[in-house]
Length: 159
Image (tube, rainbow, N blue to C red; front, side, top):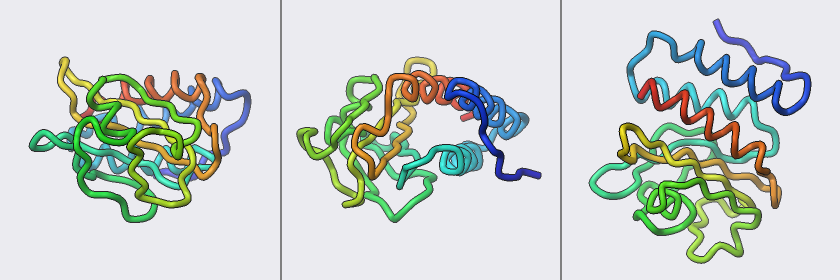
């Protein structure tokens, strides 16, 4: 049984607890949708000041909406377009302090002001992206990026 955890300590300690929870949550489960669903729910209860967290999966050469927490979202995103598509095209994390200044930003939720997108790469192939939006400008820092990339590295073993 899972319950809401109180995250104490510094940011590094909090993220370490999150990573341990993710491993425990996914251990023994191989279903991609179940694991992505639980991963998005876990991040949603862990991260403060976010308004959307979820996954876009590569299908037919485009990103297609996968499991998420938040308001309804854009269903399809071309690779190379917006923050998600740029991260997918470059296979590198995009951390955007102000999405309104990002060329070609796709506004699925008008409340979003900052965003981080981490590519999910397995065996050299793009599987999808983790996308997190915040109503707070400059919400995500370098430490968030490092630990969210580690989160994806753990997750990718189970999808």
